[in-house]
Image (cartoon, rainbow, N blue to C red; front, side, top):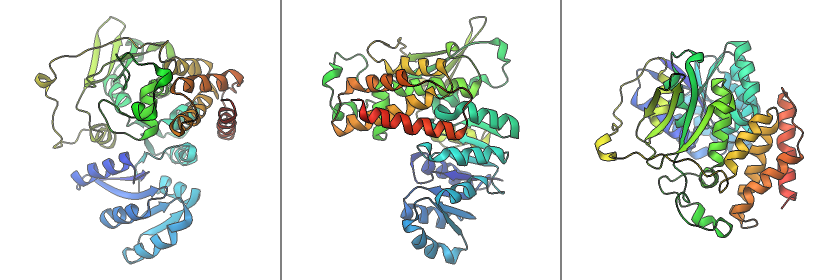
Length: 380
């Protein structure tokens, strides 16, 4: 029986993680749950899974939640102290992090310092502070593992392989809503950009998929997680979204990870590792797919992908600038104050003005994040 904590339990990844727990009641148990603000859903989750501790980050409804959970003997915490408590609870062997934004950085560091295995679903921590997190894991004996489907695919392909046998890591991308379409990107509306051809996701990640910034961020994640150079990462467009990742060996052979598009698969593997749990999720039917297509990305039309590579080559605090400026630019586009084609320009301006700090501390990363957001706000 493995006990886990879920930081961000009311979001999509958190809900799917609890579905995995529910499917394997003899193998998984919830030690702690944490959410930013959805008190009602957190209450229902706590009542059902009976963790030892829950955290509602925003204090407004924490008193209400504490009263509701008092009959069940569940401790209720709040604020950053509550997140730290949920992330380091002694009974939890693995911590699933799925809380968006820089809010999760301190709790992740605390979990690693406590020697926990940290399964990361959201991109920000590994983009903003990947080098810092890897250093902490190496020093403390903690471990960072991926939940994101592409990086889970790479992780599975790389398992047991000697590093000197690996030539290249290949990330796949669906291409977003504008792949293969003759659309003037200067005239794209938020409604058009939010219409993903395959999946329903949150607005931020959907826009990142449209600009290919999501792959730029994933390039940075991959270099940090797997300790390879940025020049060993390749991105290919794969509209069918069946092949999640590939690796190429030095002899030219390639190995791919395939599966249906269901986040329960990478979540379950992160929780079951190093073994695998049997599940009832539908298998991939290759005869139904019939064809696989792969294309080179258009770096000129979608410059955000190239900015991801550039940020990693600069290193230090530059990925934090990329991430923060992009978040602001996407918010501006969704609000109608900038064009879709201006998103990469806002990010590039902030990166041009920044002088990266190498081997930054957490405070330096957070200060850089705040600076980049201010810079992106004023530089229209």
